[in-house]
Length: 78
Picture 1 (spheres, rainbow, N blue to C red):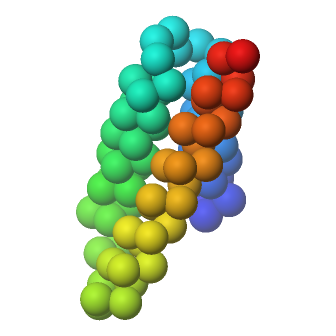
Picture 2: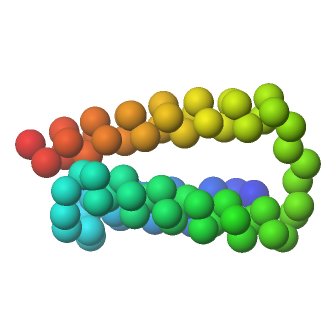
Picture 3: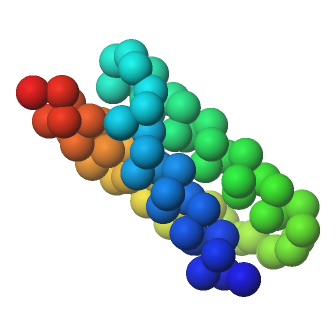
């Protein structure tokens, strides 16, 4: 099941640069919203426990993911 959930996100994020027209900022916003919706649905189904360390690691990972993806999208435009 975990692999299936991961594949849904991989396919969705892989198609974004090819299907969504707009600036890289719009694409990042769309990918972030899609990731949030997916994570929220999974959260409602599984109800995992979170502590401060989990939130901190997730926040830093999100910042790094956004930084890498925005550079990838700008490079894709060139």
